[in-house]
Image (tube, rainbow, N blue to C red; front, top):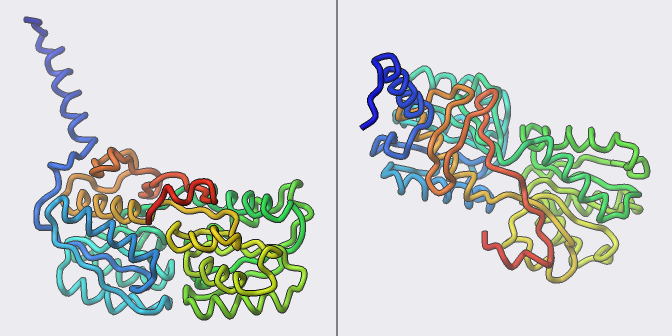
Length: 335
């Protein structure tokens, strides 16, 4: 049997304790945690998938989960839900923020009462939460959208962006990086003519698509970095004379976009798995609420089937890079 000196034995013990302390295991999660998900919009298909992923995770670690939220994606529409959840003394609130700043005072009040706050999909200012679970690196998403649309429109011509709401944190961050990518010499023949807002509403996004095509007769592409927007734009283009002439791309789910890929309206688009995003956010919230992590950079925790995850700068946890979907692979995915 190997014998260690007192000093060596102490060093080994410290190392073991450090290893245990820096990575929270699934066993670190308390049972019965009350965790509420607040989507941007309760009936948004993307949000439903994300929230279902969260509920799946909560069931795994034997928590008590629920989804509550507004039917519109307005900046202040989530406030009353935050206030109610605070009164109900939830252990954690997991929220996709409609506005980076408007929700902060209410989320700070929740945190002051011991409720843990995790943003996912769309962040608040850091003061409004302890952790942010991001789909992918915002810069890579934004730049990737320009790289993709450039291929689809042959590297030249006019294009427009159909966004969600003017205050959506994630949309605005991606668009900022899209504009940065456009500054590169290889995109000198491409021109962004308009950023339109469909407010994550199907009908408004549909009408905005129509307006863009009427206002810019030479438009070659529409980029919609929102699952509601890309589906609405594709639906309009599919039954119009613009089909095959105006490219539609952006961020959407394979299930909602499959028919448009099959009929040739959409050649390619991108996304991550929103179910996994919600799943990861639930595990982050549970570890936080259990005291297994505090939200500091460098801490790690077990996220069930997604494995070990590490907290980055400013409390950010990244799910992973997006996938490009097209006719060759779309039938391999079901979400």
